[in-house]
Image (cartoon, rainbow, N blue to C red; front, side, top):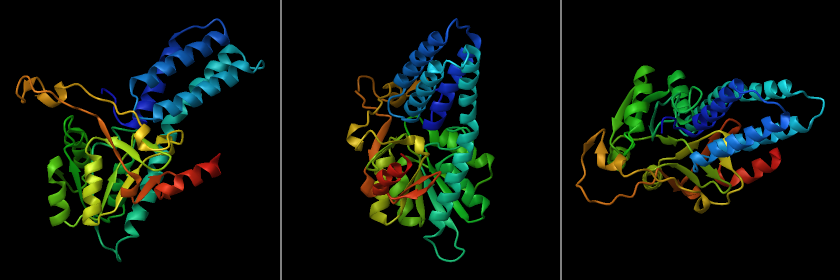
Length: 312
């Protein structure tokens, strides 16, 4: 958890590989290829729910194999091209996030009249601290603020790890975005009394049918949004969409240590001897999602298969 946020996990994981490769000397292209594949597979196994690392690893392994098989490419050239590809991930992520912000803001504003201001609820951290910069769901909020169409942002504390209280709140204050922190159990009351315009969250993995795994607590917010008639959006790059998984039932959910629930820092707050269940993520059914905001546009969950069919 030193690195969290699906895009950031992929970028930091790949950059860590780049640092190791720069430090090491290889005698053959085959040795370099084997080292790349082994280390990338290890990185994928470290965080099973977020798909971005898995997709990045598959693409980089394919690139490594291609460079290794090309007899016209020398060892040092192979290494250099591989490292350049990883470095380009940083710039691309920021560009994609800004596109997500543009499409998301436009989508949300299309649902309000005239020049009305909007109130947005978000969950967990999806900003610069979870990506290469700007953010996904928080990128949408940033764009609304830049357009002077954001009246207020509400962020949840995101128990038990408190990413919202520690990280999202920090980013909102830093950017001088009007915002209020609420505890996770206040969402229903907020929607009833504060006229929330939309919910925007991130994603760690989106199945091909649109079911979305995100930080624990997301599912219940989606249910409440449906009841209160508040559109619920998922903001995520295409690297978070896993077309190999047909539904959320097949997404592996990472479970975290009991200590995160029973302690605040080093101070125990729960009774000794109590058992805990601490899944880090839950899955929101596609039926509760109004749209998935990507760098290529906003798609209804059922449109993902069609879009990927066009791309492939």
